[in-house]
Amino acid sequence: MLIKDKKKIKKAFNLLADNQSKKIFKQFLSAIFNFRVPQISKSKINNMYIEKKINYMNNFSKTNILNAGAYDGDTVRHLLKNHIPINSILCVEPNKYFFAKLTAYINNLPKRLFPKIFSLNTALGSFNGKVKFNPTLGMNSRALFTGEDKVANIKLDKLYNFFNFSHLIADIEGSEFFMLKGAKKLLKKYSPNLAISTYHYPNDIYRLIININIYSKNYRFYLRNYTSNCEGTVLYAIKK
Image (cartoon, rainbow, N blue to C red; front, side, top):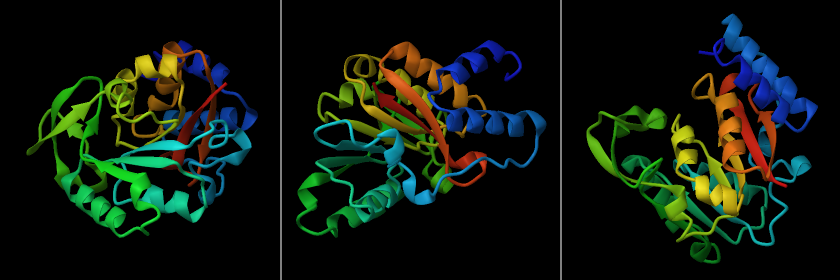
């Protein structure tokens, strides 16, 4: 697949906005092509989803965050620990077991935060309806064609009508590509800042960049890694 996508890889590389991103891109693909343990240039884990140097959190008057794949509230804890000024957060989690933990966490937050942080038990994808979902896979749970449960599935284009987010933080176990397909209209019209995990499939690191650029020409693209392994790679798309 990667060999056939040579032109796409080159195009995605040329869309990256700084040398650090291009270095990470090369290191990531080198590890995939050569079947070797990656040694990717990493940033401090505390900078994940914040990244002040590329202005991820700072170019909107109000910070309304959509946290997709919210797990048990770990990203919310991270943002609060780093004193990120937040107007509101909508936490989306399709796994019913994790959603229960997430809801319990939110319900135990200080009263001053309670009106700002909400949760929604749904998957995000390229259509509105329901999908089969296997919640027994733990942190690898994802929407599948087979599974013991059915969960709601919603396009971001529709969800945006109810929650106007300025920032999207997404780690949804390989469904990022389909989530973005369901966000074409809002990306073109509003261009919220994006922080998206880009390691679940080998081609995500370039196809996500290309597709976002097709949906909207209003982004600068950056890559950052937080583990030195492929699994810690995040794509940032920052509104110009």
